[in-house]
Length: 297
Image: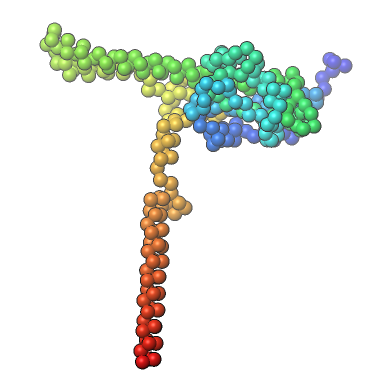
């Protein structure tokens, strides 16, 4: 019986969130600089189809001196309690995060500015109890979660390695620019060549040697010109928090395209109108009183 090949159940009944929706939710709720998402193909455990989706957010304004935070979902419903008993939490610990540039102690989550989001879509989610607070530990489910985490971790590791290389090249350029002026003056004193021409030539050479400091990344560490968004992978986003802060500091507009700065005079105009109305009302009352007093006389 074990050698008989049985047809797998249909998997078109699953309703996953999708990589784009995962990234949109993380972008909205988490202030990070790197986002990655992965959706595993549907598979079966004990005759029940299921699908695993994972999203991660790294860096930015996340606390770097704490352990990673795990957000667990089952059929789009958040799981808030019994985290240590959940299969998704155990799979997060089993993933070798050290291979991707993060520090991790034994039997614990990785340390660093990281948020992990795990979603399981299935027609029959195996909860540990009737309270539906944690997913039961099955080998098939844990394997799919681990593979999805490893896929996102590889993208994160590539990004971190390329980022460190860019930082190293930027430091090299700073050292070059610090001594280029002195070298140009020394060459002018020895050879008589114009110091400005020597300075320009050495600066161009330094920029050429450290050109990687100005490169934009893709999912494989290659150069792209798309302003920070990865070109070849729809499941990865790199956000520049500096540009986001500058745009947030600008005044917001209303539905008619007017900024909030133009809305303040309208309020003052209403106040002045109320004040003038009160004054005019008092004047009319005084006139009426004077008129009635004249009639009595």
